[in-house]
Image (cartoon, rainbow, N blue to C red):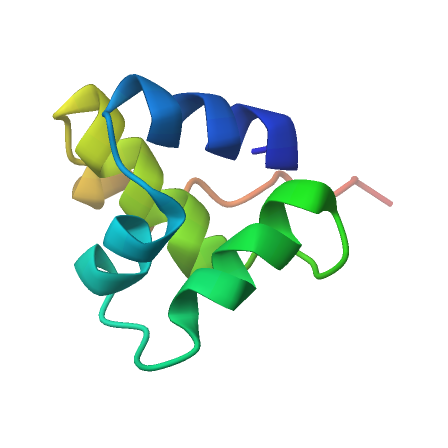
Length: 77
């Protein structure tokens, strides 16, 4: 998820940066971190992207795929 996509989803949900930080239980300076992610000053953590994906789409990732990933075939020698 890009910073622009994160910001677009947040705005579409009607959440401020501060509300997003509260949703993600980020603490006192959470809104500052959300701002930094959105302007690209700090990398967007994977956990924040997953939370935003779940909240913005209302769907949970397929946990079976996460628990049992398909193993890549090894090249034959």
